[in-house]
Length: 72
Image (cartoon, rainbow, N blue to C red; front, side):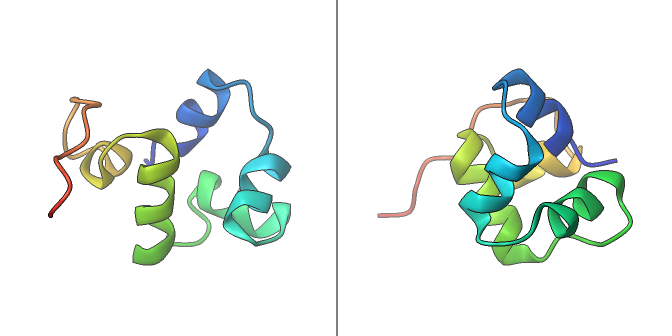
């Protein structure tokens, strides 16, 4: 399962705040957290930037929260 709920809760944010950042509805965002809808790549990248982590961490591929260096 995706880690976006845990990342959001760790930052004391509600779903509406994250949804607003992404430019979408709270309901749409909620479906990402529950796994009802797959998260598009563009949204994954925005979330990784927002939470200062990697897409791999969000997807559960790694347990390392550190983000990768940006390409110059």
